[in-house]
Length: 106
Image (cartoon, rainbow, N blue to C red; front, side):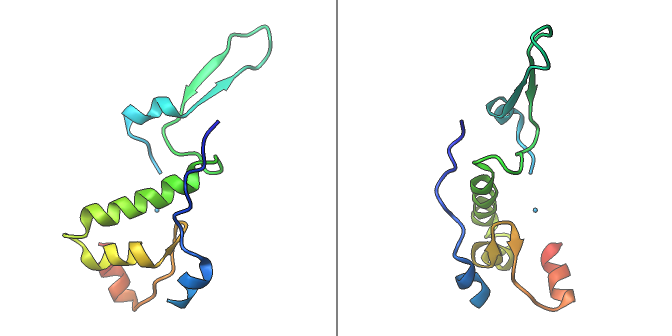
C-alpha cells in the first residue's frame, strides 16, 4: 500500500487566474508481484518509472517539479518561477510568445 502524500498542487482557480523515471536505488520501492496461476512461480517486476495512477504518483510528479525548480533556480530563474507558480499537476499554464517559450524550454 502506498500513501498518497500531502497535496502540493495549488487550487485550479488560483492557477487559472494567474514532463517520469526512477533512479536505480529507488527502483526496489516500486514493484509488481505477479501470479499467473497456482502452478507457476510468483514473478517479481521492478518498475523503472513512476506508474501513472498509483496513489503516490501525483505527489511524486509535483514534488519532483518543485525540487527541480528549487535546485536549478540559480541557473534558470524564470523557468524555476514558472514551475513554482504556473503548474497544475503536470500541466504548465503559463503562456507567452512562441519564441519565449522555446527559449525557456532550451
